[in-house]
Length: 209
Image 1: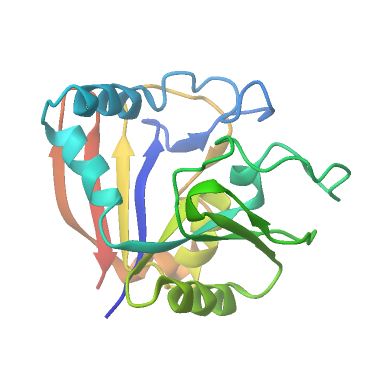
Image 2 (image 1 turned 90 degrees about the vertical axis):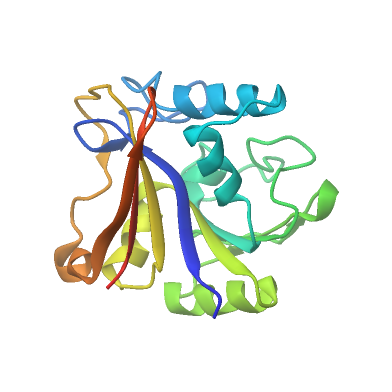
């Protein structure tokens, strides 16, 4: 049965997935400049043909994914109505998804087809409906929640996430948005399936009980 998965969601030692004052020049905010250093290093190492724990987790995040769900904040830095619809994401003309991507937002706009097979759909539907649409688009493959933390929280509170991979890195952010806050009883439905550490990050995989 297809699963709803989260991968490579990186948090600081004090639990923050983004810092303060997110903006175009600092997509993840201030105080978290090294948050994703493990991932960029792993991408570089993989390109050079190397192997390792961090690279293994990058590879898993790309396996059997047929659609993606993300929040408005992950798609871009704008807030509120779309005053300028020329923005088509952080990733240039050929985003790395190559499938349908559902962007959760209160401010709708037409779907945006991109090079390489990615199409961004903008929706204000309930997350259960978006989940179903994404599974239909994935055509039997799994669906990935790309982020950010607020979007992941919504699905965790509803008990809809089947697998959550966290990368915990040795920095202290001191402020921003904490992933594991405001989950209520939703977190009770999950357990730690495995944990492994590299020199750069501790990888923890949560699954539904």
